[in-house]
Length: 561
Image (tube, rainbow, N blue to C red; front, side, top):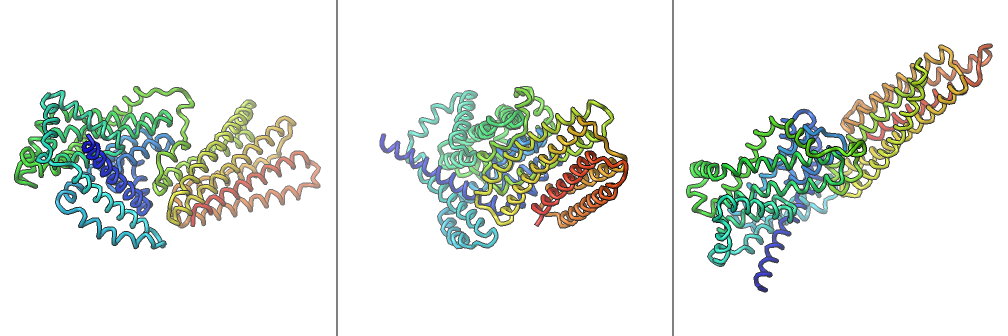
């Protein structure tokens, strides 16, 4: 019994070492290539086909489908990604995660792993002490890569071959001869293993080692891989529990896609594996994987990749149906369940080089929301409908509360990201986004103050003359233009060389308009039609608009280097 417990601990320890290496490798490469990953992720908003490509590239790059799917759920939760776009990303992530199996099959079973790990450490450790640029992050990546290989070697050594432990064969044989029920049992085992280790890649590594050592034949290993595809959905489902209805639906799409895919493949699995093995015998190896355990890892990796590609091809045309089914199975619990939020994401998406894209898009959305208040102010000033000013006052109050909440959520989220080890470029962007949130919240406060001033004007029945109305309209038009430029800079920052120049030009126009309005006010003080109360309110409003222009310009300065 002691020996059995010791063997189990060796396997678990080796698996933990493998997972830790994968974590270090994944985080290192995300930090080193964060800018490129953000550009890849930005492709996903175009159409579902590019979404599949984006999901594949990002997952293959970071070696974690869980990171990609959780981020997809978080994008949906934040309102930055539609369910159609999320579905495409998930399809691609399932293909990308199969790369791990090929790395293990081609390198892990063909060479002595310690001969790779030691030289990798020799190269990687010096890189950790180079503070300039992203070089130290590549050192993290290489160290993680070396640890991953060592963990795989320990895993191979901790799992005995059948010649050393014939009891294993007897145990597995007892459960492998139940036909259809045996398949379901091993699918369940694969799913549970993935849920426990929280990594489909680690579960895949364990399956590959077991099959290479002769513990399980190809067909059993394949059913376990199908189970792992189901088990990996648990991560996204758990992440979505604290999200809104859109996050839950995105996670449900992932589950539906994987479960339905496993269902159709399970029905044809014996025929599919036989055809695949015949093809591989003619191209990669000579002996059948059914008779030679050494060929099972390659056959299993090929099966995993082809299955997920076929699954994506089948379901990419059915994405609208999947979205509809997810919407039917995950019901909204009301308006509060449909509010886009970011506050829970810092615990589920910890890699700042990728998370920054989400925050940037949310800040851009924050700017767009704040800009709507310009229209509300315009209607309060000039609407001929006697009821509309009161309605607009209610909207401005509502939007002011919304901007306060968004500012708190985003600032808290960005501060948590900043605590990670980030590049200097990312640190600049985080600071700029935090400053932008503060500026936008101040703009909303100014709009709210202006609304109160206009409400007082209406209550006291104070009227503006035609020149005042014309000048305020011109100033509001300039503010609307400035909002457009600011929003463009938020979306494209920091890669917008002309953004700051355009922001400065419109800021100069706003200042010139304010100076004109101020001068005109001084010129009419001796006019017999001069109304001191009207002039005070007029001065208050155009000065407030000029302050809003200053804040808008500050945002462009904050996000563009």
